[in-house]
Image 1: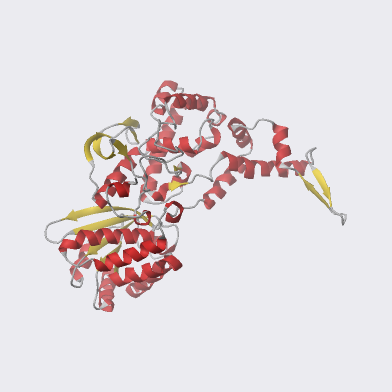
Image 2 (image 1 turned 180 degrees about the horizontal axis):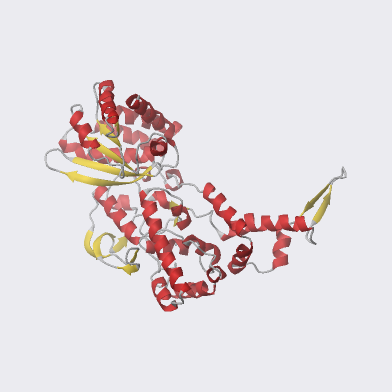
Amino acid sequence: MKVSQTFGLKKTQFELDYVDIDPNGDIPLFLDPYYIAKCEFAFAINAHRTLRSFFSYLLHLLGQDEIKQAQEIFNYLSEPNEICLGFSESRPDGKGVGPIDTGKIFDSLLLSEAVKTGLMEDIEDFRIFVPGIDKDKMSDMTANIIRKHLIDYTQNQCKLWGIQMQVNVPSGYYWDRTKREWVNNYTEMLIINEKKILLVPKRIVSFSKEYTPQKYLQHFVLNFLQNEHLRLNTSLVRVHKYKNGRERRYVTKKSIKYSIGDIDKDWLAKFTQDHPEVFKEFRERTAKSLNVVLNENIAEDSLLDIVQYLREKLLSIPPGNSDATNYHRTVVGILELLFYPSLSSPQIENEIHEGRKRIDIVFDNSAEGGFFFRLNSVYNTPSLFIMVECKNYSRDVENPELDQLSGRFSPNRGKFGLLLCRTIDDMELFLNRCSDTYKDDRGVIIPLVDQDLVSMLEVFVEQGSHIWENLLMERFRKIAL
């Protein structure tokens, strides 16, 4: 049973920011440090800094021949069964980087040509050059190191969806990049059937199929060697003669492999030491081929059924204080469906139950293109985070609501927000008020009402992000111009 089902959230994967795992089995998704390093949004940036901190310190210890201390910090990289990602076919049972494997991998690290020569500069290169490291183990190591980030994320998601957590639970060891040591404390944890669970943002997981030693060898190293054999006209060159008299010289990858013999990760390291330009090209081209895991890749539900359900649910919620939380959580699910992967990691900033209920949401801006990406680079609007204010009013929102949202803006956090409410009688007048806020350099606020969300949901299956891109751009032009 998935986490959402266990707690009766009545939410699908399309509406949830985390990977909706089943604690009794693993999903074949992975935490790939190379992919995380290429993600330029708050959660990923912080996680990558922690990964780099651990790896840099480990290399420093090895470089200073402080082998015992290096092994001590490496031994904490056991399998984290809390994330339920990887290859286990049933309940996670510790088949990742266990105590024995950790020792073997550390021994491989000491003997690795990549470490000896200083070739390995990033933690993601473990998988390319260190024997015994595959994507499953690389994912396990990553989860251990960034466990604190995943704990914080899990706490935020539980708060967002009203999931009860257990207090005073050992966190499990995580890497503290400030102290440069492993830390364990007591905190709130998500517990399911007496097992600790860590939720993982779907925006940072991958199928881990790009940055692999197999692809490096097959598509870069062997391609380079084929060209070299042709250039030097070695004995591996074969000639194919066509009927028209033309000839084609070629070298097969199979013949190159046979001539070399055993090709292992140490061989790859030695080759890379001699030809660093090939590895550089591999890294650069791989970075361009990385793809976000989409909801369609991991969800079992019908998108058409989901958007119809959300449309009907939104319109069925009465305005007013008593239904504010229901409205807020419905809207968050709709925004997650519409705006993912451009926005991610939603969290409650404030929750107030005195008088009207209010939930202010902050998203990470994780866009790699489109409207949210252009906010900072083209429209000169800081947007590291996207603020969302939800108002389940039976009346129009006015200047006080605008001032409330703009008052949360800052150059570092962001100066863009979405103001969601049920209806606005005079949209043109309200956009003029938003324009006044913008011209006073107090940020950009775009209003979205029920009918906007309904219209986007109705055509989202066919048009995807184009529908909301067009609407936001149209509103922004009216405000800015």
